[in-house]
Image 1 (cartoon, helix red, strand yellow):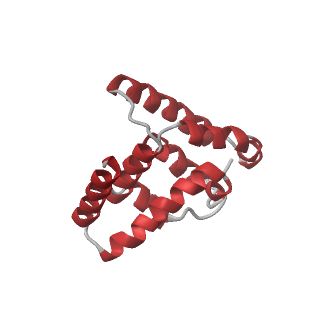
Image 2: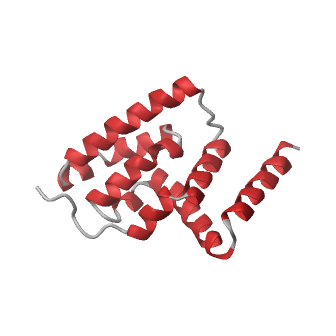
Image 3: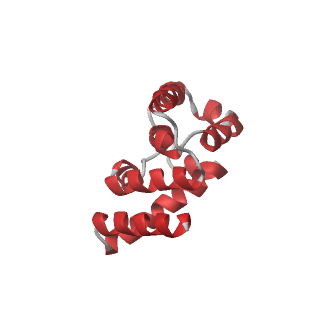
Length: 138
């Protein structure tokens, strides 16, 4: 069985792994009201690791057949913890992650931040997130 069904988008993978991608993922999680405790975070990370292993073993038909389950997974998991699964799906079947509505919504936010990152430094983006958080608390 082949590892990949096309050429993965290295720019997307690099963005998801970057500091900016991690900051945006945390901000998305905060916006969704997800702030797990350290114990809960470890449990979620174990779930994500199991899902990565499952995706890694799937072929194209299996991956496509479980789209509803993958979409529910992305809806239920904090995006910061689900990034590893998104990356594995991109490695396995490039662009398929965009067909999962919940994952696609969150990836679009990360992509938009990546566009801003080309204009601003990571520190400025972090400062913007901090200011937005303060304004939202008022």
